Picture 1 (cartoon, rainbow, N blue to C red):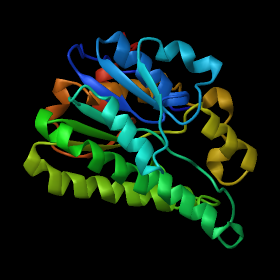
Picture 2: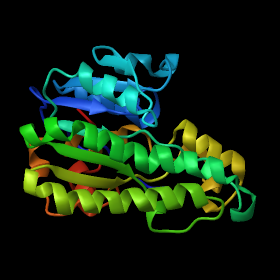
Picture 3: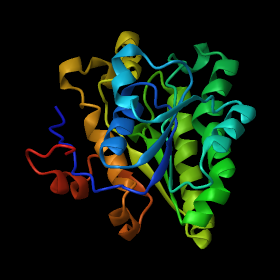
Length: 256
């Protein structure tokens, strides 16, 4: 349906990268790519990685990380070797899925805590190290940040806020030589998409699983943003589907 290919990822030797939400899906695949390209990866997982994803994490420094708990974030930062080149804020949640009047406000608050406040917590905690290394922030985004979708009050609202948060990072952290990106990710074959499909709400839930994007595609783009070429980009708002990335990918590219 999307006909997207993975982009070639440059050598990342010498880079120290922290990935949140690394226990499964795009985060786990991204961790595997970063390791294969020579990066030192610190992989934050909220719970033990599922068996299907553990192979991607072999070689990473894996630790428990809950972005809603400041003490958990402080422990994660303390694990770092006094150096951080890239922070990838990949952790996120889709729920609650449901019509506006039926969703629980406390459940909505939790989604905002993960998708927005958690991103802010991670950035502020990592900022001293990122500023020292003239580092990069990569925030996982979505087209839902700019498009209202039936049943997605929590997801659309929180990702719209995360998008603006990234714009604020670009505006206020550039003076510290920290670069920020918000990368839109198309419907991808992950467990999150399984929840969407089960809801039956809005057109995204109707996309057949075999038509979804392979996680390696957005993971490869996020990995590319960790590399030196990304420093030449002059915008923080990007999308995996952008011609820039797909021209780079070509018809038969892989992450290798």
